[in-house]
Length: 433
Image 1: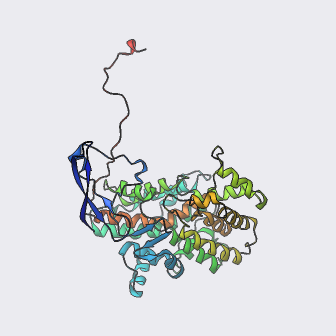
Image 2: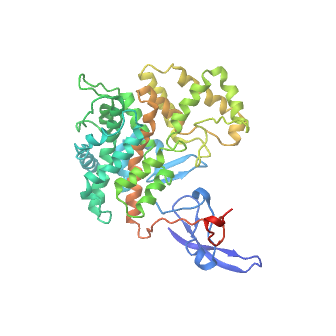
Image 3: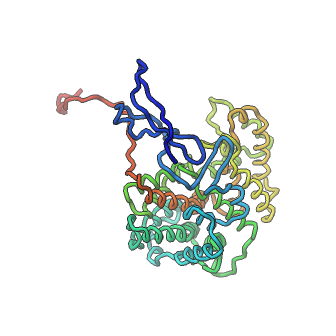
């Protein structure tokens, strides 16, 4: 990364105001360094949602939305989803390289050492109502980890950050499964460190003390892929929230809890649930064209959920992977002929033959098929965003670690364009009208 050219701002007369460095990364568009803009010109920039602003330097994830490309550490998401495991991808995000066999074993052993939760956290769960949303339990319990594991929250100590990283990665599935069990009124299932990361999570969610839990390989593979595909996605809303919280040197558990809160928003992590609701509303294939027209009508509030993406202006590569996975896992579960899956495929076909959606580059995204898979596995819609959080926790903690090592790190402090009143004199209450 380096600056080898400048762009210049000029005033109305054509006089140069200042020169700004242009910085190029290894891939993607160059950026204009505006750090000195206010000092040299007296101007700020205005960028709602920060959609045209790079807020940090990162080497973790690369996205080319125009061409439907997603890579972690230089590896294509298609190869990782097909050939790797979630813990291997986690190692890649945390360390920058895929592990050797010995490194993989050591990493998995370290994660397994931290899967248990402090026993008192069971009392914390029991303070919630049984009908509480699992995401509220996840936020509360994750934030509470700082009370139980305060020996590793010194963010300026590298060893403390490392231990907290393992704890976040290991304990999130346990917390998520406990939240699921609690809302179902079933006893908690303890982790089984003889199982893989995904198998362990499935057993904690669906295992019962009265019978042996039986795994379905296709279901395990599908959840592994879902976790890999959601592990990190550059500077999205929840990741930016984690970085913003971390910039004040808040403890890592609090930062991740903040990220979960951001993810809970329906515009972010709740989209796959919205897809299922939309498919239920459409009901049958015979009504698809009716709803396609509703989606095209600017005066109609109906939206075609699971199509289009803030970043991708092409087919979301994660959606392509999950479409095939959806067919495989539903076939293994004997649900491949279910109306929901058939309806989704027909909706995609008809929409992508319509110039309206093609011209606007509204292609299926990762949420379009993930909800169908999770529902087939037995997860209620209230757990969809929880599963998203379990997967994304490694991206959050990897981004947090990267930020903490950054010598240019500063506390986040966006500016604003003020549109309120100018200075006014105080008027006593008796004189106000």
